Amino acid sequence: MKQLITTLTGIFLVNFVFPQDMPLSQLLIPNENWELVSNQNGFTDAPTADNKGNFFFSDMKSKHGLFSFNSMEKVTPFLNGVTGISGMKFGSNGNLYACRAKKHEVVEINPKNNEIKVLVKDVHPNDLVITHKGYLYFTETKKKQVTFFNTKTGEIKVADKGITAPNGICLSPDQGTLVVSDYKGKHCWAFRIETDGSLKFKQPYMTMRRKPDPTKRTILPNFQSSAKGDGMITDAYGRYYVATELGVQYFDPTGRLSGVIPGPSDIKGISSVTFAGRNMEYMYITCFDKVYRLKTKTQGIHPQDGPQKYPPKLKN
Image (cartoon, rainbow, N blue to C red; front, side, top):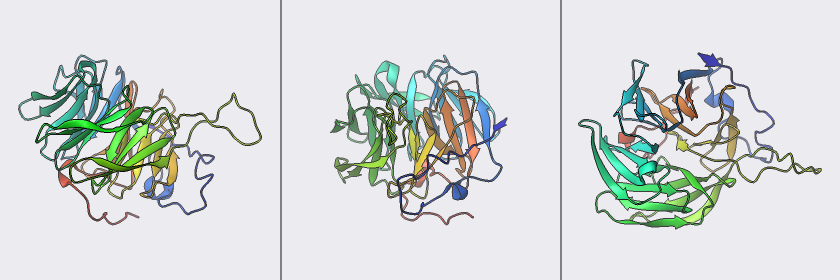
């Protein structure tokens, strides 16, 4: 089942005078539309992919918890009983790292034997990323902070504090930059990752588009204070994709907005986004009770690939 994508021309690059790094024509495939992957769920979130490109997601209201969508293109339960997962990523070792929000813990799951190891307790994790060095960063939205955990030494510390509502989190392809979305603001914040895992040089890196504010009527347009920036991911070319109220907003490596991809017409909103598929060419979005995917011209990064020094050749 596919749905037509409608271009939001009024949103793209209104205030930008520089050319787009990647216009929609270089990202979207003509006549390729959103395809329904799963429906009749409770609340879907935490989309991610393993080293083979298999897609996984969480249903936070389901007793099954986690689901997979493999090469057979069939949704099946994955690790029954692992519930309340709000964010998860596969590490280069093949294990799954997850924010078990309802139990206030971060866990490591071995898919081979289903062993679950609690890494951090008494926290309020929302979403996470893990580097090839084993540095794990997770957002704690209620505490307005980003927390660092070293999976090799057990060190845990506050990496940053002050973002209004830190939510989505992702790494640049070279794993040298950490980016965090602010659910209650308009910016995605960037940090340089130091060799010891600490974060430096915090700055508002990307400005997300927001909906117009109908309560404020002036000559110049007024916008709502928040873009509701949620889950996010990067592709192999260093471009960032953020789930927002308007759709999936994507930015070039310098932080310039390149466009907004509207979601399907029958969804309530988009909670997160990722890339999966054998060639990591499918963009997957979790949309409350549904999951959709869209085949694109770009590609994501397999977890086992580690830091990327050079981007692949652009597809025509």
